Image (spheres, rainbow, N blue to C red):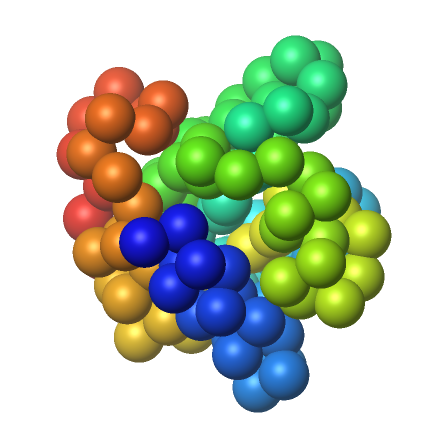
Length: 111
């Protein structure tokens, strides 16, 4: 399941519907383009807290992925520990592939 999830993120990147990296994610959140924010499991607590705060303030769901920064970076072709999906179709497909025991926002993410 993890490989299918990472493949889907790579496809979103090639389609131009993924904002990789902290500054791109925050800009996507501010511009209200982000539909779902994904964070690698080993990202720093400060970055995770700042990103969660910004996304939840705008009502954007946040999910912690069951993969490391290295795995995420390899799948999307750029070094990034967090990404924002800017397409609702990709966001729904990714949500279906994330295990239910992953650390996510308090409420169930819905698009």
